[in-house]
Image (cartoon, rainbow, N blue to C red; front, side, top):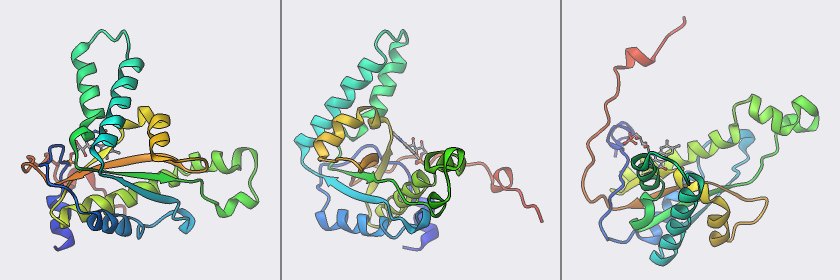
Length: 205
Ligand SMILES: Cc1cc2nc3c(=O)[nH]c(=O)nc-3n(C[C@H](O)[C@H](O)[C@H](O)COP(=O)(O)O)c2cc1C
């Protein structure tokens, strides 16, 4: 598939058929994710695919529980239901690909301290560690499109990070950063509206 077609055809898919996703496809998505650019070429990631339905359900149950704890007492029931829904859309997905990352070594780490220390500089640079993971995830989403799969980037589930890390067997220095639900689309979602490029692009020449 032409790159531009994959970019134009990609959309978030939240409803999947019951068809399983081949382990080879998940491995190929991880391979392509690993080719993404990363801060200081740190390649700070690893990818863990879960296809076992009971493990996915167990994780979704942990997220339901955390959402209801975090928003206990919230008055707007309908909003709580929406938050819960979007945090657990992976519940019936045939596969979830989790992305874990470890801290990267910056070149400036050797000379920085205090307000130029690792964490301060990382924040000043607007979190290149997380941006690197974002680049890897976009490779996954576009590759899924190319392979005829649907995918949904998941951040809502991170409210239950400790519980999910435990199930995944992740230990320091590894931390769960994000996840992607993957499967065969049940239907083709309507594409989102996007403004014309003139509205989002400025050229300073
Ligand atoms: C960083 C990030 C986190 C997201 N987290 C969730 C999520 O937790 N649950 C969900 O249903 N969709 C999630 N999405 C999907 C967005 O809602 C979706 O990309 C957006 O509505 C635009 O739709 P499109 O992807 O079809 O263009 C996330 C997207 C991004 C980029």
